[in-house]
Amino acid sequence: MKKIGVYDSGMGGLSLLARLIRDMPSYDYIYYGDAANAPYGEKSREEIQSFARKAVKELITLGCESLVIACNTATSAAEDILREEFDLPIFGMEPAISRAMASRDKGTLLVLATSFTLNSPRFIKSAKNFENQRKIIPMPGPTLVRLVEDSIVEGEEIRQELEKMSQGIDLHTVDGIVLGCTHFLFLEKEIQRFFGPHVKIYDSHGDTLALIDNGLGRGQGGGSYRLISSAGKDREEKSQWMLENYLRELR
Image (cartoon, rainbow, N blue to C red; front, side, top):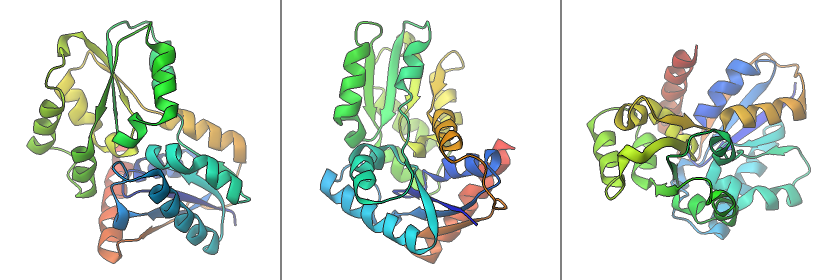
């Protein structure tokens, strides 16, 4: 049976795994969450590449024949080098900013992501390409990532952090938000509630799934999954709880 390895810095990639299980149930999945080294957003490129190599080797040892990097930060830092070093199909997260810019909206676009992603050449180039069409404001959210890692996906802590992150921004001009980190999918309802129903939220999960589906075709598995965390059994149990809750919401 073909297995797909799904790799993230922690629990954020569970949001993509849930959609893979729902939309591509003919595969079996092994999820590797590197919670022991999370969050990645403040790490160096070399550190992230080292973490990624270790994760991929572990997933290959467990029988995975293809890899999904379910982490925008790891995609920015390590996708190219992993493709050079490992002989298997590798899929990274597709940036959602292009889809947001394809809309006719002309208000301010916020891009919520890690500091690493927002400072990456890939994002800087994308933002520069669109700077004449729309005002783009990068918003790093390291505290939001940590809250998701602590299984906090709703409540006052999130709203307070969003308020802090939004200081100095004229929210009346905002009509779009890009979720540039898989962790933030778990916070989508709170983000929508905070910014208002008129604000469109964009994520790259659909585009990434389409790439994986086109690249791999139909599998022969049964939709099973296994969760592994570099932080041990307690984190694996938390991950199971997060995944089950998110799957219920999707269905």
